[in-house]
Image 1 (cartoon, rainbow, N blue to C red):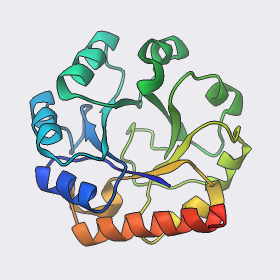
Image 2: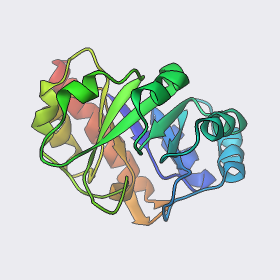
Image 3: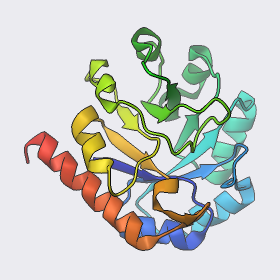
Image 4: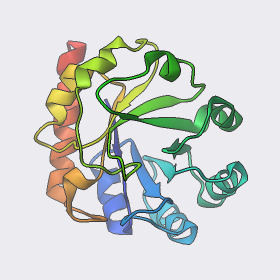
Length: 208
């Protein structure tokens, strides 16, 4: 089970994520209470331990800006929460993670056609593109092609991540506010519990 800790704003949180075995950490470059500058993200990514992949979160940014930021911050993936189309994703190749907001249902055909490394599904909020803290019916993701990498986000916490994994059977999960004491400040105990519970549920789903 791939686990991403998003909304990293402090080196100490990135270090803890690596120590607890997170597969990725995320830096938000879009408008958000967890927004960081490219310089901040670059500093953290260069000083954190090897292991977790680094992911940049963008919303409707110019393609060249995304590419430049990815290069400057040494990002492994870029997570797109805006209205980026298939051509935009294709231009970024296998480093693109396309996020979609779920409002009752999923446009399966539209999701299937995106050329990207993975598809991320988040809870819907009419005023926010990500970090909504809202869950959705995870079972609808079972309708997607099993060959696609599916990441579940939105309202996840140590208390419900196991249920989300068992319901959606995703490739991975993504958490931010569900393990925070305040925006941008992660709680190490909650982070550890989230990763442990996500992995345990993944093992149970896989029959290990």
